[in-house]
Image (cartoon, rainbow, N blue to C red; front, side):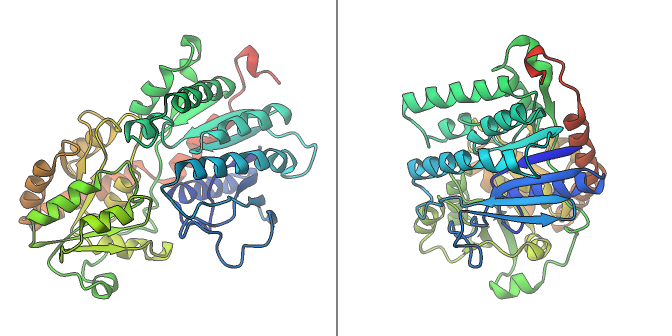
Length: 414
């Protein structure tokens, strides 16, 4: 197949969604497909285009499996400025249309276009490019927008919410298939589609690279570099508004015998650092190079997966999978009955507590921190699940099936 991929991040960018799409492309390339990626210049780490990539609006390169076209992302220095970020997404999406139409040579037909959200605007770009290039439109949802932003309070303007919801539903209708990460997300998305289209929502969980992320010693260079000792509880991921990290800071106030590490950057970090001021057992560490991920994860005794109440049906924290691959137990503060709650409970790889509940989090930490043998057992269970069920090869095969599926709806005929 000839496939166009439209995504906000791609290697060497360090965003989690970029890591996901980079590996999906690699798996599809290994299966012999031709791929043309349309993405942004690397910018995620500092919310500014990285050195060596500036000076051009669009950069193109040829690869062994196709090509990569990189567009200036117009990044906002103020990560909390949602209006500025929305304008940047729209500008990026507008430029992505002609770039995607010519990716791989014009006017060549493609078999499929795979577009990733967020941002939601790329779904419309993917559908338009698929229609104009006579291909199949597949829309990959990592977080359901605008639901996640509304439930965190990031968006409160009713007109903005209504406009985003109309765009969301239109994009679903224009796509031949929508892929989501869990059954919860499928229920959410399916409810917004016509009844006859609900079978067009497919669940494909994100993968974890169990060859790259392997169990390692807790006493490693990362621990020494950041002066970590005793029991370490870590949050490793985006420091944003969807994560109830304020409960982690409050837990640290009550558990001075545990060191808490927040490893990552994001719009909420500055506020959290202010909240943690004066707490000697809290460390903030910026994003690390991808080749250090296994080492970073191994440095923790317990990994934290906090998600604000109400977000379990619209978001699936991928950090859970990496913690399991590292053979470390997790404490997940998530909505009961949602994907991560079921995963942690069914695989016996950690403890689940109610979201936004500091006392429940403190209780789980006390229970697990004092039992190294239980930590080991839970970590081993998680590692076994990750190896058996979340391999990149299995995920690549699932995307191949979706991308090669023939359109069955009259509106999808090209």
